Length: 166
Image (cartoon, rainbow, N blue to C red; front, side):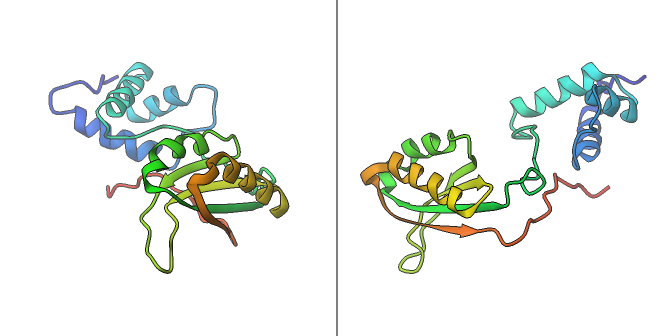
């Protein structure tokens, strides 16, 4: 087996690794070992390569991407808030920590039509449950929140990983 550590081979291994896992890790007990076998290297090399890529910011994260619809969460809403700009950096992580928020981030405003600058994807099984959860967020934001609305998903978009040209 090649180690993937030969001079000049690290970039090639990284590219092949991204191509191999871009659509997801195999759903087996030892996914990194299976990926390693497909790449002709060993599991330790795959893990070390991914750790190095994470450390230098070449990849941001490795994580599961659940299909919320298949799990019964069919009322998914992007809650958007008009929050004091000076408070977004402080409040964003508090909102992102709710277990029903899959992602939370700052976005630019586009006044006068779009005053919102803090976005949080809220998942629930029903619209009333989403609305209850958004009220929880609004309560946590307190007086820093000047307004909000919910944009509901009408269909699921296929999520894919990074795809590199071969």
